[in-house]
Each structure stands twice: as structure tokens, then as C-alpha cells.
Amino acid sequence: MSSNYADGLSPYENKGILGLPESFDSDDTVSKKCDELANYIKNSKHVVFHTGAGISTSAGIPDFRGPKGVWTLEKKGEVPKLNTSFDKATPTKTHMALRALVEAGYVQYIVSQNIDGLHLRSGLNRRYISELHGNIFIEQCHTCGRQFVRSTSVESVGQKSLGIRCRLTASDVGRACRSGSLHDNVLDWEHDLPPKDLDMAIMHSTMADLNITLGTTLQIVPSGNLPLKNRKGGGKLVICNLQPTKHDSKANLVISSYVDAILSKVCKCLGVEISEYTESSDPTTHSSLVEWTIPLNHVNTIKSQFRAHLKETVGCSPKRKKARGAVNAPASSKINN
Image (cartoon, rainbow, N blue to C red):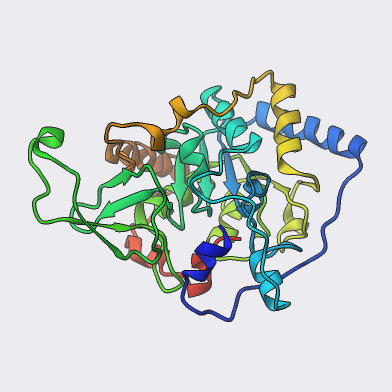
């Protein structure tokens, strides 16, 4: 999420409500609400976080619809101040806290609208995240579909060819991908969301007894509606954002504060230590080839859990839907908050 990324997208007028005023809870209120959120997490079995552009602003990457967002300033005829590049940005306190919460067993999954690669660079394992709009540090093969980590961000968006042969060699899986070529995997307005990432996001969001949103106004569909997937099963919704969202009235708890402060307090309540970012844990700094493909065996495991969940909650197994049908959302669903 930066002005450079936004400039690479196709023209599109319907960018949602821009520049809504921010509000802040008092310090005392934030502390009490963070204690409540920590208790929610502690007493939940399946916790899913939904992250938007607001978790990366402290890394120097502007959001889109905030008071100083790319599109908010664009509407005023102004240019946003870009404090850093994608390559120089590093994971925030929130990114590192989420990794720590996953590793401590408190969080089962993360659904992200962000393309900045900071979840990847925090050292988070691929099996715990759906990237609905792509990742600027990933290249993907158009033939075999495998994804690979880059050391630098791509210069294009919109799934354009990078002019590179697939990196899958015979020594990797028994045979090479001989005809494949690589493209960026960052979506433009007209692209469908990636089926595996979306399917995993839907299943986890539905199974969650607690969905928590961070730094997103939830204006985009389908990603903005995913946190509501657990409502029929009695699940809770917590919204953490400085601007109001369209789902605030449905939330069990709304916290208006900086997400770095919220996650720091929550981790302290849970006794989870937040590690500092290190290059050794960042796959983009590794000299060896790192794959970023969602493990198929993990997808199948989650599908089995999802079927069991639906059978338990509604008394029947889910009807099979085509993945493309599930992801064929309006064009406005393809862009980050």
C-alpha cells in the first residue's frame, strides 16, 4: 500500500468513503478494552485476525482512505508523503505481535488485504495466512501456480509477466516445471481473488469463535464481510480501527486506538513476548530459494475441519461450490483499505 502501488493500478472511480475523521478512546478506556480483548482471546479456541493498511502506517507506508491516505489526498489534488519504500520498510510491532500470538497458540489464522509483504517478512509461516490481494515480494508461476519469495519488491502490479522462467527445478519435487514463467501476484481491480487464499479465509473466518479486525474500515467485499462469517455460530467480532466501520454496530467490542498499542497491551496481558524484527527471520533476505505456496495438505486438513464444524453447527455438510464462484466479487473488492 503506497502511492507507487496505487499509481500502478488501473483507473477506478469507486474507491469508497474517503477521509472519515479518526477518533481515540481515552488511555484508561483502551487499557480496559485491551484487558477484555485479551480475555476474549484466552477463552477462544479459534481466533482469526483480519488485517488492513492501518497496521503498516507506522512502518512509513500510507493507507488509502485515512485522513492522510493516498486516495484521500488524491481527491484533494495533493500527493501523499511516502516515508519509506516497500524494500526498506520493516514489520511493525503489530506484525511481530501477530507472529508471536500465532506461535504461542493464541491465534489460528490471519487474513490480510495488504500487499506490502510485511507479514511474510515478520517470519510468519505461510500456513497461517491468506493474502487476498497478493504480495509485492512474491512471484508466481502461471503454469504450476507455485509462489516464490523475492529479495526485492516487484516493479509491476496486475499479474504481469516478469520475464523469468519458473524456479521449480527437478531437485525440488522430482520433476521441473518446464514451460512455466513467473508473474507478479499483486491484483488489479479486475482480477478475481486467489481461490486457495480466499477459500482458506472463508473457512477460518466461519470456524472462528473470535474474529478480530485491525486497521481496516471493512469497505471492500468480500474481505470486509469475512469477519461476520462466524456470527451464525455465535462467534464474537472485535473491531480495532481509528475510523468508523460499517460493521461497528455488529461488534462485541470496538477499540479506537493505534493497533501497535492495542497489540502490545494484549500480548502483555497474555504473557506473550513480542520479538524484534531480525533479518535472519525475513525470507526476503535469504540467499536460498524460499517457496510461499499454500501447502495443499494443510488446505485439505482445514477443509476436513470445516466440514466437521458445519456438521456440528448446522447439522449438515457444506455443498461444494466452485472456487471461482466464491471469489468472483465486484472489482472494488480487489484493493486494500
